Every structure is written in C-alpha cells, then in structure tokens.
Length: 237
Image (tube, rainbow, N blue to C red):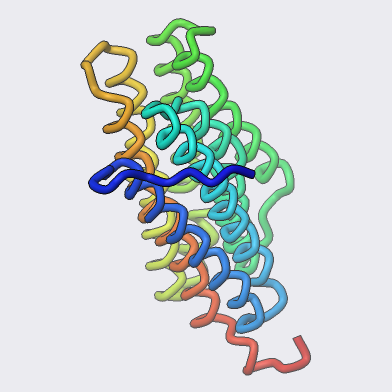
C-alpha cells in the first residue's frame, strides 16, 4: 500500500485527516465503553461505533484521492453514508428498545427508507436520475424518518418513560438526524444547481460534518447509556 502525503497548507486534506482521526478515536472509545454499560445497551453503542468506523474508512479513501489528484468525488461519501446512516438509525432504535419494545417492522422500515434515501441522492449526483427528482425523493424519505422519530412510536415510548436524561438524549440524537443530516441535501442542491462550489469546499464541509453527525452522536449515546445503565450497578450483566 502506497502512502500519500499532503502538502503544507492543504486545508482540505487537513480537514479529511482531522475527521478520520476523530472518527477512529470516537469509535475506539465507544467500543471500550461497551464494558461500562449493561448488556442491553451494548448493541446501540456498537452500531454507533460501526457507523463512525465506516465513516472513517470512506473519508480516508477520499483523502487519498484528494492528495493524489486534488479531486475527491462525493461517491466516497455516499458509499459511507449508505452503511453508516442506517447504522445510526439502528442505534437509535435499539436505544429506545431498552425502554419499551419496538416492532421489528418499524426497524426494517426505518433501515430500508434510510438506505433508499442515500441511494436516490447518489443516483441524482451521479447523473443516473434527474437532479430535481432525486432531491425531492431524498427529502420525502428523510422526512419520513424524521416523522417516525418525532411523532411515531419511538417518540411516544420516550415521552411515556418520563426519564429526563433519556428525553434529553433522544432530543439531541434525533436533532443530529434533523439538522445535522440537512447538510447533505443542501450540498446536493448546491452541486446540482451549478453554484460553482468547488470539490475541495464540498469535501471539507462534508468531512467537518462528521464531528456533529457521527462523533457527537456516538459519544452522546455512550454518555446516556452510562448514566442510565452503568455496568457496576449489576455486575452479573
């Protein structure tokens, strides 16, 4: 494997590198943190950790492409999102499932819709689907996921639990999906509208978005698990 080195002052490459290191560090901390919580809470943390590792790998590939050619196609990001976004939704699902059982149908529906959301956006950016149609379909699918998180069975379960730390954590975690993920259709719109945004600016923006959307998401999930279900309260689990 050849090693590529960035030039001094290359802000885009530095952004990629910082994102990769942050994602890997967060994933390691989360995986270690599974030993700090009860058994049922390990699964959502593992899903969040896997999402950060997938993100780290896709951005590492984009970084290598940028350093070698000064271009990094958004395809690298889409490949990561296609896996990491459903993993994050799975983490949310299994977190709420610890409080009140959720239907298996809801799980697969959320995973399928999230993956399809990423797929149709990619088809638009890659030129396989009309840009406007791709953007609209992606927004509709994204709004469905938000509807389930804000007005569906998961929100109902959290509100009925009346556990203040859980309600606060769920608020911030789904906010990452509502606000943090908004940057992706925004970037898609800017690219498709011919705004002239450079590939480097796109890459830097998307790599920096990993900090709130993956890293903060995972660490918030680990924190609430430690607060609600510390392993030392039940050594047998």
